[in-house]
Image (cartoon, rainbow, N blue to C red; front, side, top):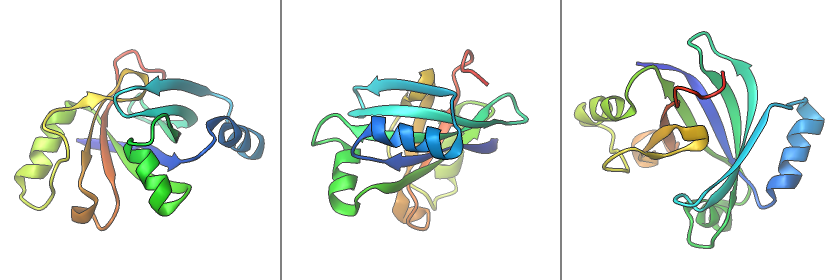
Length: 146
């Protein structure tokens, strides 16, 4: 079952400057930074609050590390801004994706889940099937900070 908004993904050209903006403007200080080679991004997760299911809600900032990454292509086409919304699940992300795809209205972009932020497992739903919104499903890692 989908239990929360896990994060909102925002594409940016300069991760460090964007982290500073969110820290200085909104006071977010619980920040995790990592490079996801598979996705071709350097990313930061800025925790905004704890969720009632043991998870949390984050703002995810995404800076491309190579020109062929999806985020680099997004920035070239649309510029900085909202990239995607991610919903957290309390179970297996593959089962959630299969259930959504099984209804026959939404395409899943990956055949199997991939590595996401902070050890999570993720998959994406096609934006054309979701009202123009790229949608991510997230299964948090068991040791992920709440």
